[in-house]
Image: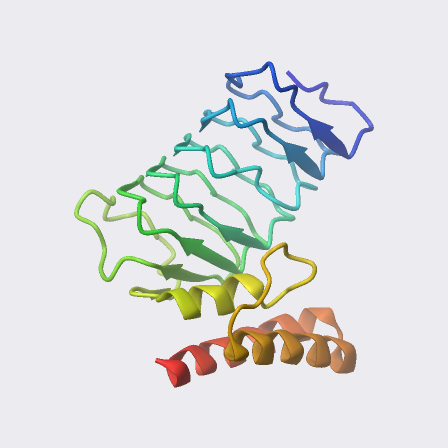
Length: 212
């Protein structure tokens, strides 16, 4: 396990590791970034619970399952993009992520457990690539009834994932994505980051409906 009182803000899990234990990083208050090797395919139960400075979820394109409460109360995470490799998101996976305002769920996620996104930010918007809720998703997967948009296409997904570029590592591929990205920067410069996020989210929703 990662030492709870370690001062390191970044931690690279060794390439030799294939399995992470439950609660492995739980309550690591200084941890901001974690890199996992491709040999790790599952984020286990409560692995990063209460990592309140963690800014990004370490879910690469080899992860297939996110365990129960894996990122519960990670209060600094603002944006999540679930990769195509993930098929299973357990209950309470992102419970209490109070800064989370945006999530993209890939088309390969066949199961989401109960209360997966409970008590997230009131501004949270959920974008799903699938055209409708899969049967296996728990009826209480989104208990706070945050807005959900199904049927997000490739262009719309790129707009969503790249609007914080270059802070995010996804670059705009379409002119509409570049427009949103530039608006993000202009609004942030003019009015401050906290108010800008809300305005850019509204602008992004408008442009997504416009380009459909």
